[in-house]
Every structure is written in structure tokens, then in C-alpha cells.
Image (cartoon, rainbow, N blue to C red):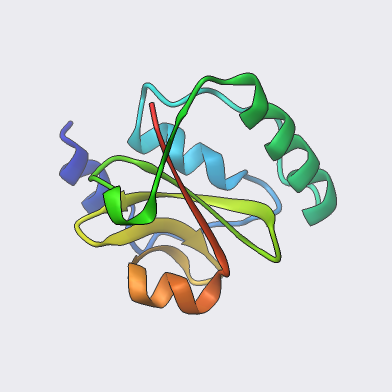
Amino acid sequence: MSFEDKINGIIGLPYDKFKAHCWHLVEFLIPDAPHIEGEAINLVSSVKQFNKELECHNLNDIKEQDLQDKDIVILGKNNIMFHAGVYYDGGVIHASEMGVVYQPISTIKLLYTNIQGLRV
């Protein structure tokens, strides 16, 4: 299954942030992404686990202007990173309250004050 087929198959699907970590979506779209254990029980535990897991893996930091398709995008507010998605065609595929969505980077910037790119 191609990357585009995966995207087309998941856009619009419901997503329960209390049962699945947003990183599971990253792992689905990017099979080489590091595996992160656990579930998003609540925001505080999710943030702690998320940061701990990311520190364990050797991923390359990418500046926003250098993002390429299939780069991992870590999102947050006030320097607390708590959400992840995948960059594609000028936007980010991520799990939202509405389900799995694709949003242009300009919209992402309105929702999150911190954007960090990572490349496997």
C-alpha cells in the first residue's frame, strides 16, 4: 500500500485520543518511525511518556521551512510538545477531535505555537 493510499484510507476516520496515542498514526504512515508504547490516558501522562520516548530515539531535527513529505511533525504550545502528525504536501495529517484530518501548515500554525520537524 502506498503512502497516498494510506492517507486516503484514514482521512475522516474517527479518532479517540483517550484510547490511542497520536503517535500510532505516525507509525502507521511511516513504518520506520520509532515505536512509542502506551496509550494516551490523559494529557499529563501522555506528554511525559511522549517526551521520554522521543528522547530515546535518534531522529534528525528539521526546520519548518525544510519539511518534506513523510517528515514527522511534533506540535505543542508554550514549549510543551504533546501532539504528532506527518507532513505531506504543505500540510499535516494528524488526529483531531474531528477524526484524522489533513490541515495546511498555515492552519496548524493557528492551532499550535511550537512546530518541530523530525526525520527518520
